[in-house]
Length: 130
Image 1 (spheres, one colour):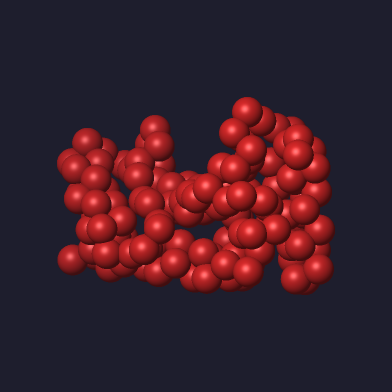
Image 2: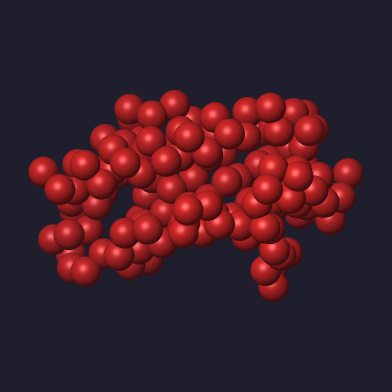
């Protein structure tokens, strides 16, 4: 299945679930939930790879804060199944990344993945506020 076909599976799923997905200029799926913007990013050359992203949720204002971000990201990542939190440039991203035999195999765990991602972000924010 090529990338466009895989995008179609996820796009149709999100639409059916009541989200309003759009495609960005890179061909990634963008959708919002409660004011938060998420992405589904698929790799052109790695068919089983699936990535759900919550980008740019914590801006890094200084090098001292970067060290705090790195620590909080490790805490959140280590304590949340499947989720990863990490700095990207001067911002912080959260992701769920997995391999799935087919795009349809992701659909039954999509909501749990979204929940895990939000849990990791919440743990990160709690750690940053300590």
